[in-house]
Length: 193
Image (cartoon, rainbow, N blue to C red; front, side, top):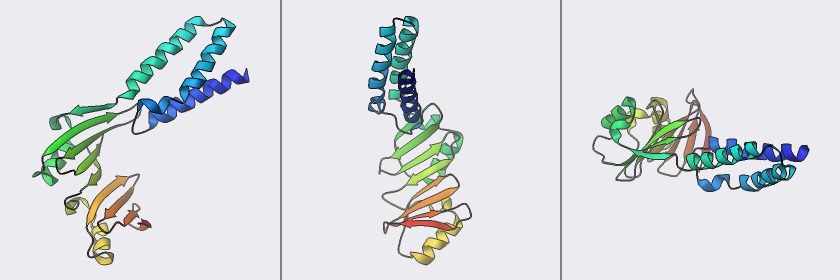
């Protein structure tokens, strides 16, 4: 029955899509409820598969509870060793306000926020993925030399306030509000303000 297939497909697409997203809020899965209610009503009306219905209801309830809160505060000592070394090396004079573990079905990451508002994000192995500085600039040692030279040549009065590394690309944000993206060969591939 096409109606049944449509509802099941809608439920699965919504659950998978929002399960893969980086942030998880309980309200993200609200679009599932109408499809789920129609599916349950249809099956109930047909008076078949009552055990299946109960299993679906239980799985849905458990999934909702589990996925709603995936941020867990942790101690700095619970970070991967690489992340701890990074903090001790480049942010030794900063006081940690909060460290948290973000986890989902397909990912795990760590965020460290300092009392001055600066933030570092690490992947599951402890490699930095993003460094955001508000009070000062990003530690020069973590910025690839080609990017430093580019900024020094083209924007001599600007400071690098944020750097992000993702999918073999670096994106930096400068104090003059420019955002510049570099590919893996350190070529500029996008500039935005």
